[in-house]
Amino acid sequence: MDFASMKLLNELKREIEWLRCELRMLLSATPKAAFSVTVETTPTLISRAPDRGYKRVRVYNNDPAVTVYLGNSNVTPEGGYPLPPAAEVEFILTPEESLYAVSASATVEVRVIELS
Image (tube, rainbow, N blue to C red):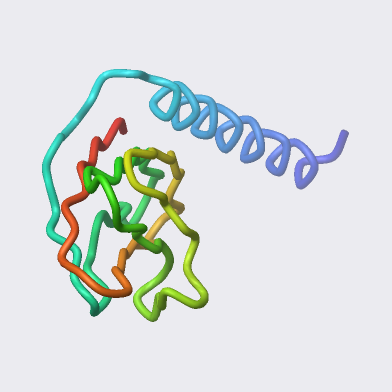
């Protein structure tokens, strides 16, 4: 194996080890933060991933009657991922990615747990 191939192989090994560490962090079930967010009829920031690394986020719709819609900063009720009343969903946000929510008609409280 020539020097360039060995160098590339070492770089790949370091990258694989970094990814293993990230995966261990993502699979950790220890909550890092838990909070409530009031969602209205304009997109509201729910959570943001760090510049480097991933964030596992669980969102629970605490409203008994109103659906919330999840997506990016331009989320709309027509194009967002629907989260029905008393339902929860989990996302893994990639670096620099953000999760927003919007309601079609009312103020809704969602509960958020950031797991990594």
